[in-house]
Image (tube, rainbow, N blue to C red; front, top):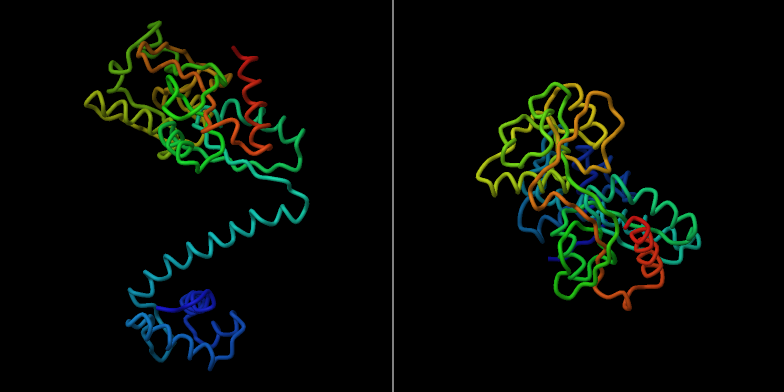
Length: 296
């Protein structure tokens, strides 16, 4: 089965425009050449990609399947171009960092900002992931540096302290829990919760711990930031679980300690081997580790 990017771009253009002639113009082909390419592609695949009718062409189910993959290919190519373009402008290197929700929202913006001002020719690719997934990615060599909430050092990885933090409950003033100094997570599972969006590391963490207790969280609303969680809780929408460092200055909130052993969420840096890091990654690792020394 042989086809190339021009074939895929032609199919996408036909699907978008519904016309072979307009699609050929978009991809800079003569209509006869476009028609020949489409015929050869359909013959190679063994299925028709479009239904022909008087008003144009309509994608078949097979074409829709091909387009899903083709658009992913286009997106990956665009990302590749975006990653390569800065090197033409003097970029020296790129460092890939995976971090959990807490680190990205509370600590990394300032710390990475300081580093990038001092190292303007280094680019950082930052992605939010749950701590277990970060550890796996670092161990597999897919990521230069991970920032995780984890106890101990997984086999084969180097760990250094980064920041100290703790998960706490926030409740509205006047809520029955506002009179408590501390509470176990299992005691509040029936309460309506304000949570971060599905897919965020802390949302996954909360849902998994509720499942381990044989229950499910009553998620009343999901928002995009810890500040929004605080404001929703203060407005009486529900209760929330957030890192202490993320609590916004919002009137009407009461903090309640969580007694579970996992509540301390001290953040750590992890790498496969500090000696094997690129110079840029080693410099960032040292910079973040130094921030950890200052927070101890």
